Image (cartoon, rainbow over all chains, first blue to last red):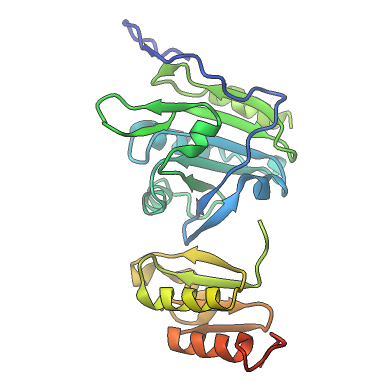
Amino acid sequence: MAMGLDFDVVALPDADHPEEGEQAPDFERPLVNHEYWEDCALSDLTADGPVLLLFHTMDGAFPTTYLWNEIRDREWGEREADDDLTVVGLSVSSPYEHKTTIAERGIENTDYRLFSDPQNGVAEQYDIAHDLDGMAGVSEPRPAVFLLDTERVIQYAWVADEWPEFPDYDEIEAAIDDL
Amino acid sequence: MSNPEITLYRLQACPFCERVVRKLEAYDLDYRSRFVEPMHSDRDVVKRISGKRTVPAMVDEATGVTMSESANIVDYLDRTYGDADETGGAA
Protein backbone atom coordinates (compact mmCIF):
# COMPACT_ATOMS: atom_id res chain seq x y z
CA MET A 1 0.00 0.00 0.00
CA ALA A 2 1.64 3.26 -1.06
CA MET A 3 1.82 5.96 1.53
CA GLY A 4 1.07 8.89 -0.76
CA LEU A 5 4.60 10.27 -0.79
CA ASP A 6 5.82 12.34 -3.74
CA PHE A 7 8.97 10.27 -4.21
CA ASP A 8 9.67 6.61 -4.87
CA VAL A 9 9.84 4.39 -1.84
CA VAL A 10 12.67 1.84 -1.82
CA ALA A 11 11.59 -1.29 -3.69
CA LEU A 12 12.59 -4.62 -2.18
CA PRO A 13 13.83 -7.46 -4.39
CA ASP A 14 11.42 -10.27 -5.26
CA ALA A 15 10.96 -12.77 -2.47
CA ASP A 16 10.17 -16.42 -3.00
CA HIS A 17 7.99 -16.50 0.10
CA PRO A 18 5.31 -19.14 0.75
CA GLU A 19 2.01 -18.32 -0.97
CA GLU A 20 -1.65 -18.84 -0.23
CA GLY A 21 -2.55 -22.51 -0.43
CA GLU A 22 0.94 -23.64 0.58
CA GLN A 23 1.89 -24.96 3.99
CA ALA A 24 3.83 -22.44 6.07
CA PRO A 25 7.21 -23.68 7.37
CA ASP A 26 7.17 -24.75 10.99
CA PHE A 27 9.62 -23.30 13.51
CA GLU A 28 10.22 -23.18 17.24
CA ARG A 29 11.29 -20.03 19.09
CA PRO A 30 10.77 -18.43 22.50
CA LEU A 31 7.20 -17.14 22.64
CA VAL A 32 6.74 -14.19 24.99
CA ASN A 33 3.67 -13.22 26.99
CA HIS A 34 3.41 -10.54 29.64
CA GLU A 35 4.69 -12.86 32.34
CA TYR A 36 7.24 -15.24 30.89
CA TRP A 37 8.59 -16.86 27.75
CA GLU A 38 9.01 -20.45 26.74
CA ASP A 39 9.93 -22.33 23.59
CA CYS A 40 6.91 -22.89 21.39
CA ALA A 41 6.46 -24.28 17.89
CA LEU A 42 4.16 -22.66 15.35
CA SER A 43 2.57 -26.08 14.91
CA ASP A 44 1.69 -26.13 18.64
CA LEU A 45 -0.35 -22.99 18.05
CA THR A 46 -2.06 -24.15 14.86
CA ALA A 47 -2.97 -27.40 16.64
CA ASP A 48 -5.37 -25.27 18.71
CA GLY A 49 -6.89 -23.24 15.87
CA PRO A 50 -6.05 -20.79 13.10
CA VAL A 51 -3.08 -18.47 13.60
CA LEU A 52 -2.38 -14.95 12.39
CA LEU A 53 1.41 -14.64 12.19
CA LEU A 54 2.76 -11.10 11.75
CA PHE A 55 6.42 -10.44 10.99
CA HIS A 56 7.44 -6.92 11.93
CA THR A 57 10.40 -4.64 12.42
CA MET A 58 12.35 -4.66 15.67
CA ASP A 59 10.52 -3.48 18.77
CA GLY A 60 10.76 0.25 19.29
CA ALA A 61 10.60 1.04 15.56
CA PHE A 62 7.41 2.96 14.77
CA PRO A 63 5.89 0.39 12.35
CA THR A 64 5.86 -2.14 15.20
CA THR A 65 4.18 0.34 17.52
CA TYR A 66 1.55 1.16 14.88
CA LEU A 67 0.97 -2.49 14.04
CA TRP A 68 0.27 -3.54 17.62
CA ASN A 69 -1.89 -0.48 18.25
CA GLU A 70 -3.96 -1.42 15.21
CA ILE A 71 -4.30 -5.08 16.24
CA ARG A 72 -5.22 -4.04 19.78
CA ASP A 73 -7.82 -1.56 18.56
CA ARG A 74 -9.32 -4.04 16.08
CA GLU A 75 -9.31 -6.74 18.78
CA TRP A 76 -8.35 -9.51 16.36
CA GLY A 77 -8.50 -12.83 18.11
CA GLU A 78 -10.32 -11.28 21.05
CA ARG A 79 -13.68 -10.81 19.30
CA GLU A 80 -16.37 -13.36 19.96
CA ALA A 81 -16.58 -14.22 16.26
CA ASP A 82 -12.85 -15.00 16.16
CA ASP A 83 -13.42 -18.15 18.15
CA ASP A 84 -10.05 -19.85 18.59
CA LEU A 85 -7.87 -17.57 16.44
CA THR A 86 -4.38 -16.98 17.87
CA VAL A 87 -2.54 -13.75 17.03
CA VAL A 88 1.26 -13.74 17.29
CA GLY A 89 3.98 -11.34 16.20
CA LEU A 90 7.60 -12.09 15.41
CA SER A 91 10.65 -9.84 15.35
CA VAL A 92 14.38 -10.05 15.96
CA SER A 93 13.96 -8.32 19.31
CA SER A 94 14.83 -10.13 22.51
CA PRO A 95 12.18 -11.48 24.89
CA TYR A 96 12.95 -8.59 27.26
CA GLU A 97 12.06 -6.07 24.56
CA HIS A 98 8.90 -8.01 23.70
CA LYS A 99 7.82 -7.75 27.32
CA THR A 100 8.30 -3.98 27.13
CA THR A 101 6.27 -3.86 23.92
CA ILE A 102 3.45 -5.87 25.50
CA ALA A 103 3.39 -3.47 28.45
CA GLU A 104 3.67 -0.29 26.38
CA ARG A 105 1.02 -1.32 23.84
CA GLY A 106 -1.34 -2.18 26.69
CA ILE A 107 -1.91 -5.77 25.57
CA GLU A 108 -1.03 -7.51 28.84
CA ASN A 109 -4.58 -8.69 29.26
CA THR A 110 -4.92 -10.16 25.78
CA ASP A 111 -3.70 -13.45 24.36
CA TYR A 112 -1.31 -11.63 21.99
CA ARG A 113 2.19 -13.04 22.14
CA LEU A 114 5.45 -12.40 20.31
CA PHE A 115 8.09 -14.79 19.01
CA SER A 116 11.69 -13.75 19.52
CA ASP A 117 14.09 -14.58 16.69
CA PRO A 118 17.30 -12.54 17.11
CA GLN A 119 19.18 -14.55 14.48
CA ASN A 120 16.42 -14.03 11.92
CA GLY A 121 16.32 -17.70 10.96
CA VAL A 122 12.54 -17.81 10.63
CA ALA A 123 12.59 -14.96 8.10
CA GLU A 124 15.23 -16.93 6.19
CA GLN A 125 12.97 -20.01 6.24
CA TYR A 126 10.16 -17.86 4.82
CA ASP A 127 12.51 -16.11 2.37
CA ILE A 128 11.63 -12.68 3.71
CA ALA A 129 14.96 -11.72 5.34
CA HIS A 130 15.91 -8.07 4.89
CA ASP A 131 19.39 -6.68 5.55
CA LEU A 132 19.01 -3.25 7.10
CA ASP A 133 20.92 -0.46 5.40
CA GLY A 134 23.02 1.51 7.86
CA MET A 135 22.83 -1.14 10.59
CA ALA A 136 25.82 -3.32 9.82
CA GLY A 137 25.26 -7.01 10.39
CA VAL A 138 21.57 -6.58 11.25
CA SER A 139 18.93 -8.48 9.33
CA GLU A 140 15.24 -8.72 10.18
CA PRO A 141 12.08 -9.95 8.48
CA ARG A 142 10.48 -7.68 5.94
CA PRO A 143 6.95 -6.84 7.10
CA ALA A 144 4.71 -9.82 6.32
CA VAL A 145 1.42 -11.36 7.39
CA PHE A 146 0.33 -14.98 7.13
CA LEU A 147 -3.07 -16.29 8.16
CA LEU A 148 -2.86 -20.06 8.72
CA ASP A 149 -5.43 -22.76 9.22
CA THR A 150 -4.99 -25.66 11.62
CA GLU A 151 -2.84 -27.51 9.06
CA ARG A 152 -0.60 -24.41 8.68
CA VAL A 153 -1.97 -23.94 5.17
CA ILE A 154 -1.79 -20.26 4.24
CA GLN A 155 -5.23 -18.69 3.85
CA TYR A 156 -3.95 -15.18 3.34
CA ALA A 157 -0.44 -13.89 2.67
CA TRP A 158 1.00 -10.43 2.38
CA VAL A 159 4.69 -9.60 2.11
CA ALA A 160 6.04 -6.07 1.77
CA ASP A 161 7.70 -5.29 -1.53
CA GLU A 162 8.66 -1.79 -0.56
CA TRP A 163 10.53 -0.49 2.44
CA PRO A 164 8.76 0.62 4.44
CA GLU A 165 5.32 -0.74 3.71
CA PHE A 166 2.33 -1.43 5.90
CA PRO A 167 -0.18 -4.26 5.67
CA ASP A 168 -3.74 -3.60 4.57
CA TYR A 169 -5.56 -4.08 7.86
CA ASP A 170 -9.02 -4.19 6.29
CA GLU A 171 -7.89 -6.93 3.92
CA ILE A 172 -6.48 -8.97 6.81
CA GLU A 173 -9.66 -8.50 8.79
CA ALA A 174 -11.72 -9.69 5.84
CA ALA A 175 -9.53 -12.79 5.59
CA ILE A 176 -10.01 -13.46 9.30
CA ASP A 177 -13.75 -13.06 8.93
CA ASP A 178 -13.68 -15.54 6.03
CA LEU A 179 -12.11 -18.30 8.13
CA MET B 1 6.47 -30.10 21.24
CA SER B 2 6.26 -32.65 24.03
CA ASN B 3 4.33 -31.75 27.11
CA PRO B 4 6.74 -32.33 29.99
CA GLU B 5 5.48 -32.88 33.53
CA ILE B 6 8.13 -30.61 35.02
CA THR B 7 8.05 -26.84 34.53
CA LEU B 8 10.99 -24.77 35.74
CA TYR B 9 10.51 -21.05 36.29
CA ARG B 10 13.93 -19.56 35.84
CA LEU B 11 15.87 -16.38 35.33
CA GLN B 12 18.48 -16.12 32.62
CA ALA B 13 22.03 -16.42 34.01
CA CYS B 14 20.82 -17.22 37.54
CA PRO B 15 23.32 -19.68 39.08
CA PHE B 16 20.69 -21.19 41.38
CA CYS B 17 18.53 -21.95 38.38
CA GLU B 18 21.46 -23.47 36.50
CA ARG B 19 22.10 -25.70 39.51
CA VAL B 20 18.60 -27.11 39.15
CA VAL B 21 18.98 -27.48 35.37
CA ARG B 22 22.17 -29.47 35.90
CA LYS B 23 20.28 -31.85 38.16
CA LEU B 24 17.35 -32.19 35.75
CA GLU B 25 19.80 -33.03 33.00
CA ALA B 26 21.72 -35.47 35.20
CA TYR B 27 18.50 -37.43 35.70
CA ASP B 28 17.58 -37.02 32.04
CA LEU B 29 14.22 -35.50 32.96
CA ASP B 30 12.02 -33.84 30.38
CA TYR B 31 11.23 -30.29 31.50
CA ARG B 32 9.90 -27.03 30.16
CA SER B 33 11.64 -23.73 30.91
CA ARG B 34 9.69 -20.55 31.53
CA PHE B 35 11.87 -17.48 31.78
CA VAL B 36 10.70 -14.63 33.99
CA GLU B 37 11.70 -11.05 34.71
CA PRO B 38 14.83 -10.02 36.55
CA MET B 39 12.61 -7.51 38.38
CA HIS B 40 11.40 -9.33 41.48
CA SER B 41 8.16 -7.34 41.72
CA ASP B 42 7.19 -8.34 38.17
CA ARG B 43 7.21 -12.07 38.80
CA ASP B 44 3.53 -12.51 39.53
CA VAL B 45 3.34 -15.79 37.67
CA VAL B 46 5.89 -17.31 40.06
CA LYS B 47 4.04 -15.94 43.07
CA ARG B 48 0.82 -17.47 41.76
CA ILE B 49 2.25 -20.95 41.46
CA SER B 50 4.58 -21.06 44.48
CA GLY B 51 3.41 -18.31 46.81
CA LYS B 52 6.79 -16.56 46.50
CA ARG B 53 8.48 -14.52 43.82
CA THR B 54 11.84 -16.27 44.08
CA VAL B 55 13.36 -18.39 41.34
CA PRO B 56 14.06 -21.11 40.66
CA ALA B 57 10.60 -22.48 41.23
CA MET B 58 9.53 -25.84 39.97
CA VAL B 59 6.23 -27.57 39.34
CA ASP B 60 6.23 -31.34 38.96
CA GLU B 61 2.84 -32.46 37.75
CA ALA B 62 3.88 -36.10 38.04
CA THR B 63 3.87 -35.76 41.83
CA GLY B 64 1.81 -32.63 42.33
CA VAL B 65 4.75 -30.88 43.95
CA THR B 66 5.54 -27.16 43.63
CA MET B 67 8.63 -25.79 45.30
CA SER B 68 11.15 -22.95 45.50
CA GLU B 69 14.81 -22.66 46.58
CA SER B 70 17.42 -24.52 44.58
CA ALA B 71 18.66 -26.59 47.54
CA ASN B 72 15.13 -27.83 48.22
CA ILE B 73 14.52 -28.59 44.58
CA VAL B 74 17.80 -30.47 44.19
CA ASP B 75 17.00 -32.52 47.31
CA TYR B 76 13.58 -33.27 45.95
CA LEU B 77 14.95 -34.36 42.58
CA ASP B 78 17.51 -36.59 44.27
CA ARG B 79 14.86 -38.19 46.44
CA THR B 80 12.31 -38.56 43.67
CA TYR B 81 14.39 -39.37 40.63
CA GLY B 82 17.77 -40.30 42.09
CA ASP B 83 19.35 -43.73 42.41
CA ALA B 84 17.75 -44.29 45.81
CA ASP B 85 14.40 -44.61 44.07
CA GLU B 86 14.79 -46.50 40.83
CA THR B 87 11.08 -46.47 40.10
CA GLY B 88 11.15 -42.75 39.47
CA GLY B 89 7.86 -42.36 41.34
CA ALA B 90 7.04 -40.02 44.18
CA ALA B 91 9.27 -40.34 47.23
